[in-house]
Length: 303
Image (cartoon, rainbow, N blue to C red):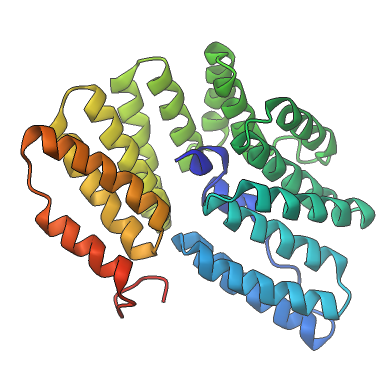
């Protein structure tokens, strides 16, 4: 899915896109805000984006009432990431821009660089590529001297170049990101997407498998579903319908468990289209998906 490509995000990139919790000091509301940020990040790491938003809103309230601008900015930034992951880039952009103002006014350079990279991702979602480039340029200029490389911004730069069709330059950027962070699922996912676009399907498969392995190690469930969906897409292009159906089934079960209805519907449409051509049966996966779309079962991962 596009949001995953651009984050950052997700976990791997999604996690580095979220600000960490500040030190637990100061008045009780501020301490409570730290706790809510931690809870929100835990939900976000699983891919439970709606639950994460609830926690980030609570943090926003607590930081606001104790007048902690950096805490408010962090909660807005993290809410923006979650809204992007839910396919709402315009809402995310508004949150990122407000966080940007607060970070700039408070001289929060690390947070400013972070939110500018996230803002660029939201602008790419909206196909506003020139504005996204400006945000990434600003993020690079904001980098502290002792931390010149910020992986989310590097990966987003590679994605931007891919979107513009400059695949050679994009490959160099993403190769450098992978060299700097061999464990990054998001950098590998972005490279896999580039290779799909260039028609190098077997190489793309390798990168998506590497992203899948990294997301499994991190316990990033939504990332797993994204990786599996892409692997299904690759195998369909390789004319291996049976493998494509298998990957999509694995993907859609995770999306359904996380309550990600939009993604669930997208993958189910792919399954139905190809199953109709091949005669494959979808009875079991259809029943599973309907259970988690219609019922608030105790088995829901994000309850």
